[in-house]
Image (tube, rainbow, N blue to C red; front, side, top):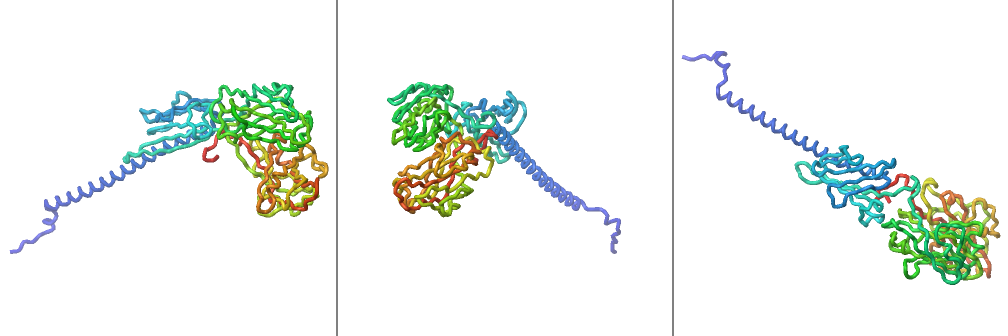
Length: 514
């Protein structure tokens, strides 16, 4: 007899089937939960990592941004302190501070004591401070010119530290515009025969002068730098002087040295501009490179020697009212600006346009026997002439210059007439702008194989400004005063090399940008 299975008998699941189904569901649920948990944990770790890095980047950016506009350092922790602090003065003269908490790993910002939370999870915050050379460590606020800030966090799970570093160079402002400088006047002097009233060259100008006739020598020293320490970027010697007439063939030498033998000679040159009796002014000599590196201690021990050398007819008496040292804290920039216009004066120079622009291997030419004007004015500068900075040296450059034949009795003159002297005839040069380059300099460039750059210093012409440079003419003359030699003068390019201290409108720039 067969048993029939109805639909009712097939509705129920066996115990084994229920057990198997439950097991499978548990496995799937647990696997899904584990996968979800792993993904959630990874996201949490990534969020925490991102938060840590954002806090780290935010702290460094905030410090760097404010350091760039700071007026100076108030206080700073030692470079070995991993939980450091830094206080600065902002442009509005307010003082703010950053401080790291070693216990809570937080960086706070604000007036001292800082209370605003700036960053969390910061393991360390250090400040390394250096003098103007960027090498010598210091924690003396007045001497700090470069700050290297470092901060670190710990990467979650990995346990590895991650650090960021920012380096900022500070340039202290003066009157919100010009680079800061300090003047030191000589307080002592000594003299050899030939100078009268040498004590009058000490202290600021007072109308009393020390007089040096031909062959005279005088020395100024005793620059009082009390209260100043550390390195100095640029050093200028300033002379407040006038003459009874032009120097003629004589030379005024300026020598700078520490106690001991004289240093390099900084000659104002033959036929150089030295003002007339009624036109006194400061004359600056850049002696930055005299020593390997200047410090204020060097300035205190510096001696400035002036020599009125009798090397030919002239007979000018030099009157010096004061001698001082001017120090810029920033290192100067040197840049050459090339002539960009030919001018309109009649000229015997052939292809004179080839003396314009940067050197290109093509030469302008002139016979030695002519009085000639090669060029006029128009130096090219891409930026604003008012914004480029404080000028400390101006030198004329004649690039790839050479002669077909040597100079014997002739002269080669350079002139910088004022814009108001544009009608100056070439046979009557304005006396205070004429400069004859020594024959020994010129004759070193005889023949194509000896072409090179002739550089002549015209800093002493005046206290230069950028508009002065942009409006001055330059004229090159070969003048036959003896037997004509019949050769050619050739010059590839004419430019003005300017050494200047940049402005500090932004107060600071990144060290890497210098």
